[in-house]
Image (cartoon, rainbow, N blue to C red):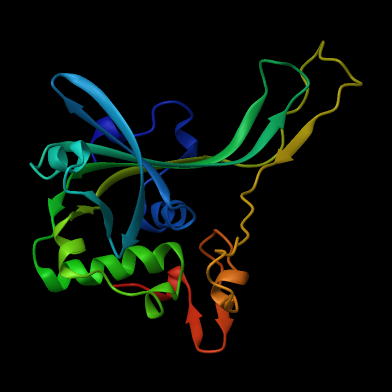
Length: 228
């Protein structure tokens, strides 16, 4: 960890241990990837998966993002969760409850076919545990059309806030409502019209957070259960 990666404002909210960054990453599936191209900053949202102490990123071989990252340039990946809006007695003291992770490094392209095939399955199972057991794996043509990158989770910072608003200051109104408005992501399947089959348990019970556990029939999978 270098000084440039240390949280500067409200340093007490910063964390730098792997369990902290793991918690933020495992509660999400969308990241924002930042890099510099032709001396201009570029930030692109994309899906990701954590595999052990690496991030997996993937996309079309024609992707500008993946072409640039595969050359070994520096990259910054962020994941943020907005957990609630914090309403205080004054406008200035309004805030938000959040968890965020920022990861710095260089990614490498996965070239080995067997490693790439495993990465495809892991990307699917990270987002929907158990899905790779049912869906058809990528064929040779599809694999050739896809770039998969591995980014080590080595240099990073985590910042978070939780809890209520601070105490009112002298002169703040006494009758204004203060508190927290929680924010969460709701998940629910929408069946494809051409497939009238029974919805698997791992889909009907799907929740987007690291603590979810799919248990039903032959499916027993969770993000915590897929460590490398």
